[in-house]
Image 1 (spheres, rainbow, N blue to C red):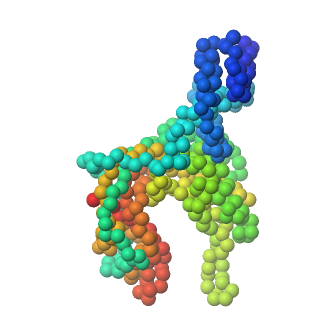
Image 2: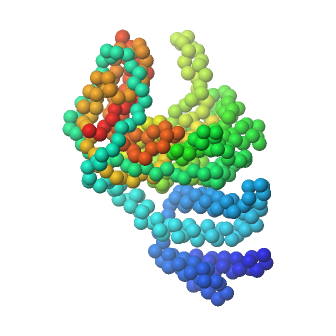
Length: 423
């Protein structure tokens, strides 16, 4: 053990010297260590300085991966041994992490530069091969004979859109254990009886916390089992501001490695963040005497979910943090996957998609007493299935947003509807 520690110290000193711009001294090092130092020296010449947010994201990913690799080598029954190893070898691990960060920055530098400054990659200009590109849209729930109209003129020109191949993050007991550790949860990961998910339940504190990772998609859900204990009791006065809630949600997702690769900094996504209040109890309006929703008791922070610059939609298009009183995190949801453009397909026009929805096609869910629907926006997006579903292709769809009206023309509620877009 003493010799190993001495060797580690020598390698660490040499690595620190290289990172500071010095020349390595290969004497006393083995062949692998000399090769590592030589490679690090050459990489420093071409290293680009990453953003602080990217470094934080990368560091969190590396720390979790390193913990996972160490954990796989430790028998599960030897509880506490992993903590002892990490504490005992902390200086050496720090050097290894520094080297890994350096190498990964260089290897991924060109790729990230392209994502940050160049147009997103487009799909090859090839026709769609034979296959099933149907989208599993939700059921249509709407009364018969309802009238459809649009606030804007819709284009009658068809177009093209990319179909993306999706690759989910790998899910295993080890990966979930590492994620749970990063979120500060204790407890062992357990596979559900049907094999659809891996759960970690932490009952060590006053409030039960749960982590669920879906095997089919890699989607991550973190929830406090009894969030009411953390929600502001007297309304918005105890809550952080909307801006503070957005920043808190971003930082927690970032440090947990749950943000997509394209999230280089908070400022890059700040404009696409949507924040809504929730949990407000009904109160009586002093003027009208009617029941209205009271002050928000928590903030729901939704981050933009995109695939190579095109916004995603559907039950799986969700990156969300719920922030309660004192800035405490009530829940997290993250669902993203690597997407590679594979094909370019022809899509119908927005006007044709609207007529399909008006004539009984597509998916829409509105009250049964609706008499009319007003479409406010029509956008081409990529469909994402529910987290419990394995999805290999992201296919374009048209998304409609608008209002449903009663027979007197009063707004009943807003809605989101979809139709398939490929010809």
